[in-house]
Image (cartoon, rainbow, N blue to C red; front, top):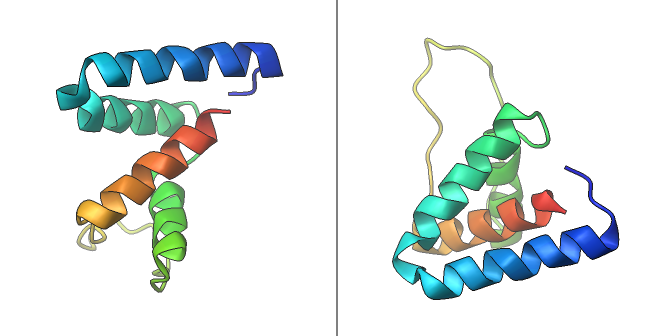
Length: 92
């Protein structure tokens, strides 16, 4: 999702307004954004999680595309915040 700087700035400001007005929905909003990024092939869910792991100083797991394997571990509170930050940065 590439936007010109003015559009990206307006979108970021609008997102901030929505998050400030509805803090109880912030996690859900970020989850929807994450899925939208994945669906539109901007960034995969795993790549966002890998970026959050890197920022947290954790090892990044090997990505194996095998539906018979259990899902990768997901976030704790600190990682959730990093996932949200990475998701937001992927929007611009």
